[in-house]
Amino acid sequence: MAFRIATNVASLNTQRWLSVANAGMSKALERLSSGYKINKAADDAAGIGIATKLNVKAASVAKAIDNGNQAIAMLQTAESGIDQIKNILTRLKELATQAASDNVTSDDRAALNQERQQLEAEINKIAENTKYGATQLLKGANSGTYGGSLTVGNGISGIDVSSAAAGTYTLTVSGGATVTLTLQGPNSTTQTVTVTRPSNFDTVIANFSNLGIKVTVNASASVNITSNNTITVAAGSSSFDFQLGDINNQSDQISVDISNFRADSSHVLNLSGDISSKTNAQTYLTTIDTAIKNLNTERGKIGAAQNQISYHLANLEAMYENTRAAESTIKDADFAAEMANFTKFQIVTQSGVAMLAQANQLPQLILSLMR
Image (cartoon, rainbow, N blue to C red; front, top):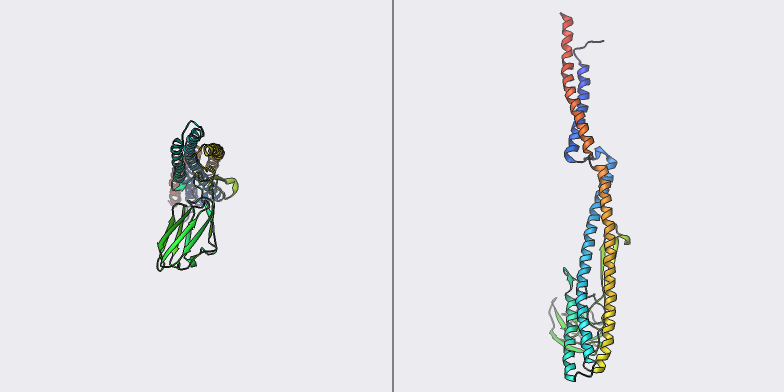
């Protein structure tokens, strides 16, 4: 056995093992204080990558669950508006039944017909005002196609057909310092609006309130438009797409179409005619029956969509739970095991410190050989 003073090998060896024990105790403390067994990539390079992916997926799924709950709330809002329209249709059926009988006079029918007009107008208001936030639910967006003469260069900057009934309209324009616009609708209703031609880059709106169309006129409105001037309006429905998953594909998306519930003859209720005479009232009875049938069909679609989203949400909630559980098995610390490791390394550290003190005393024993 060699005895050395310059190099205390025993002390160095003890220090090395003390450093190992101290590092183990520090790691155990880190895991116990953070709650995670992976706190940096060096702890588990592959594991932290998998855990990160699972965490991102879980966060996205959680937001998809929020989307689904809001989608159901949106559809319930739409259905509440439809329910009020159903009540109005019920009243219209009563009015038509009463007007179709000879026990009422022409004056009675005139009063009944007045109420019919007001109730149909109220249906339009409900369709306009049933919203989820700022999104209209029961008033599908109309689409319009325009004749070749209705261009910016001829003074027409835009045409708003959102409140118009479906059909073909004809817009005639007499240009000049004062611009006269005449719009004829599909039911032969005609309205004329006169505006002052704007200057420079300004515009002015000609509002054909009787026909539900607004025309934006610009400074180029100095020519007459008498041909290629048709406006074709197609009634639309509101289409809503809900993202109910973390991937951009059809299996994670649900689309719902809600028809336009205005009372106009071009929409789903297809209300037309009046009850001003017995014959008209009898015809109107059939119209109301068809409107109620169409309403029930559309309402059924909304109910089916709510059920579809509910089942999808149930699957998302199970997916979220399982994803978090999978992430936990990779990243979360086992407190029982970590506490055991901490206790072990704590004891080893204390023992190492004691042995280091002993190892540091060894060179002094060599001095006894020199006496």
